[in-house]
Amino acid sequence: MARAGLTTQRLVRAGAELADEVGFDQVTVSALARRFDVKVASLYSHLRSSQDLKTRIALLALEEMADRAAEALAGRSGKDALAAFANVCRDYARAHPGRYTAARHPLDDATAAGSAGVRIAQLNRAILRGYDLAEPDQTHAVRLLGSVFHGYVSLETAGGFAHSAPDSEESWARILDALDSLLRNWPAHP
Amino acid sequence: MARAGLTTQRLVRAGAELADEVGFDQVTVSALARRFDVKVASLYSHLRSSQDLKTRIALLALEEMADRAAEALAGRSGKDALAAFANVCRDYARAHPGRYTAARHPLDDATAAGSAGVRIAQLNRAILRGYDLAEPDQTHAVRLLGSVFHGYVSLETAGGFAHSAPDSEESWARILDALDSLLRNWPAHP
DNA sequence: CCCGTTTGCCTAAACCCTTTAGGAAGTTCC
DNA sequence: GGAACTTCCTAAAGGGTTTAGGCAAACGGG
Image 1 (cartoon, each protein chain N blue to C red):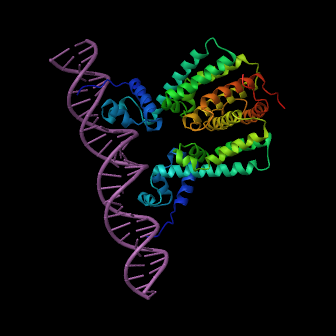
Image 2: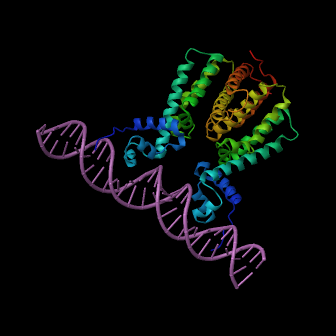
């Protein structure tokens, strides 16, 4: 009975690859077992449940995004930083659609608090250091940026902008221009 | 053998209610059968498959949102229209979280083209009539608005802004102000 | 009114995914 | 070499999906 060398880490990594290939919600303990040519029950020594697997994939995806964002933001500010962060989100989603979906998977509060999601939030806020925004407008702006990035990437990967002109690439560039302009001219409270 | 009076319409409506109660991805043919106190197989005379059910719920949700948006936009323009449309999205998502998730369910191209989604897109574009934007900037702006609304509502219903100040209500209002300002001062191409 | 047709719901059964319990083979270390 | 532990296994129960085929209720024409 040769051993397959299963570990939680390898399972989660393989699960992430599986998610990118077949979609996050097609990720199943059974499919993972097939991929390792192993019986399903064997995985339950390494994973508490199917939910546990999905949560771990989500945490992995958040780590990866946070790492990329941190690297992209190093040494940049202003619009450079804005575009760098935005492109990390978009590029990650296109390269790893399953993982990106995983990253949007709802986590319970405790798990979320310990995840790389908070690092991403901090980096998002760091973008605004290059602009002149005081609280609470800074927070509003952070939320706007998060919404735009997430929303655009979601709609784009769902095929929303696929079959129409102008192409998505151009809209993305112009939207980043518009956001930069908006952050530099944030309207005063009425 | 008393008949339960099942029809596709009633099943889809009940499915939508179920989605709001337990979440869209918990909507299952089995659960629906239980709700009608009927055997599972009976539903397959009215629904082709579990996927079919979900698709129909998605189409229902899109219809409902389009109707509300059309009514909200009637007689409004400029920022009034912007806020009205935005609030329709947000209010619908909060009143019917399951249906809202359903509305984001990916549809194949043919189904999407025949859905109320195109009506929603047209209404979204109609908002911009109150602003002075020529193509292709108009399209970029449409995509930006769609992204913000979808993104903000998704993050909010996922609990993203729940436990932090300032509260989500205030951010929403200020983000609408900011978008209005941006549309009135859309940056020229660099 | 009653008989044939249509329709609506049923039973039965196959298949897949999840999860737990308990067993046997491989590994480690004294 | 054997005790202890780890890794993977078989077995089984429970739930969701889907199809095939059957009986009974409703309906419509002679």
